[in-house]
Length: 111
Image (cartoon, rainbow, N blue to C red; front, side):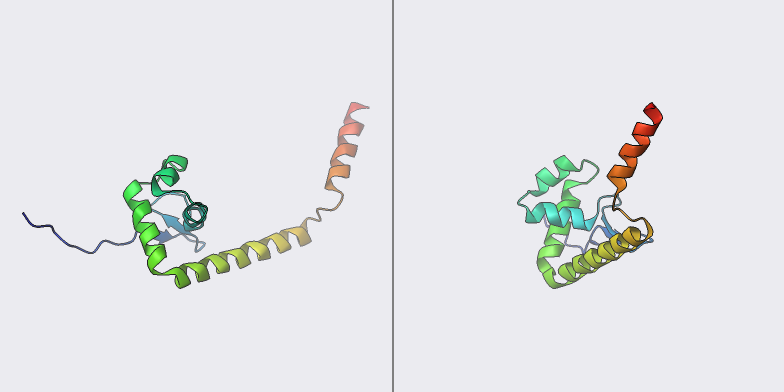
């Protein structure tokens, strides 16, 4: 009996916003990489995110280990995008004094 060797596509796909997701799920590459970096095994990652397939998680981890520079560049880009979105949202919706305004609103409803 011989083994069949065939190339398999890495179970990663970018959505319309450019966010890379794992195995046709909503779980992001960022999530899997962060969990693995924190010491989680593939089995633990699947336990935490049951929509993932164990073989897909192993495949993604292997991909990340073989291409650390590319994955790190993607993660840095995602961090920059998140910071830009945060800055934009804070400019549009000033977070200063939110707690005081909410407490004042609550106080005026009870009066």
